[in-house]
Length: 279
Length: 259
Image (cartoon, rainbow over all chains, first blue to last red; front, side):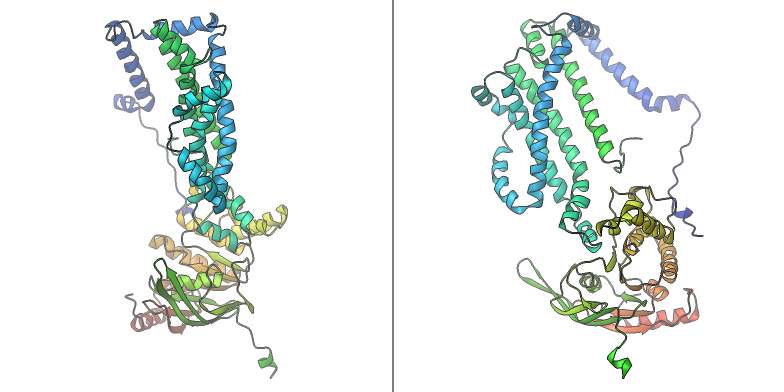
């Protein structure tokens, strides 16, 4: 029988005894300590009125959010506003990724597609998406279309670029493997190109998602009667900092949750990917 | 007379192969110079040479991944016109599909050739057993050590039942201990399922340990064949046998390699 035990990587997890030093070095202890310190400094700064009346205390923000859950603003409760922003992002992000990812893959696989699309794309790429807000409002009015349009413009670039680079960075010898095993060009694309590019595509989607939140917020700040950007600008106009900070906190939470969803989708599609931050 | 009209055809025939690469700026790099080599059926031939001696290029030409500038290659009497499943190639850098399990990697050849799932699973299981990876079928490559990865590479190449096996410095990235172990494994696998093997290495001990014949390359470009040695030592071989050391001394003396 073949003995390959000496080749197997052993993963040993040892339990260390509970000491003060161990507690102080514990990951969860440090998480908690840094979070609590942050809130304590925030509260102290608010009480000391460092920003005069511009910084609410943490519990005032929580109270404000609680109230907004039940008292509608401009006809919508907090959940309604959350949904308004999320819906814009989902529509814009979905349209952009459904077009940009396949286009990026096609550009990497076919030099004619690349030659046609690349100059236009290079022209579009350096332009900040927010530069499109004014022209979008002139074209589509102040309704939903202009906001979705800004999100599409903003998320298109990272989706396309990462799909393109994901394919271009595939180890070329892997194509040799497929050809030696009897595969055709089609097999090279399906068996190597796509799976090898998946991690890069997901990295692009993550970047696109955070850009989408910037875009929707900017569009809502300019003109909107709903959404989290609307809550923030309303809070500013009414001089109610708790409303502004509350809007910011909710955006962070929703954006975090959506990025977790994309990560979960990636783990589902790429179960082979080594979890780098799971320790 | 009958023997001559039906000569025993060599499994791999390299006829007068030369290769010139044209690099950017029209610089010509002469890599191989008139290489002629026959490998008989089920023979284990090792090409021994230092880095930059053209030996890997020769292997890639036989694989069909490069075209020779002059000359041609016959495998089983048919000229090579590109890569194909009649030749199994094992890569120095393993080149496993990171997104496939051990089983998924090994069965890729039969899958690409359209063999039904049940059948190719049986074939794959056979070769996974042959290389000693039972129980690791569902592991991903990143969970394996270097030696185990190359076992997968060997099983994947074997799984297409190729007429010839081509191994390009397969153990070059392994530590000395694992390398020595994998050489023993390679000899065992070859004796269990005989194939025609052309094996490229820069390691003289590896060459003598494995080969029926050792072909040495000159140490500089363009690559030329230097001397061919028949290794008549009984198997399994021992690195410390007097006959082994004598041959090692002879090859080292004759070659330009610092061995």
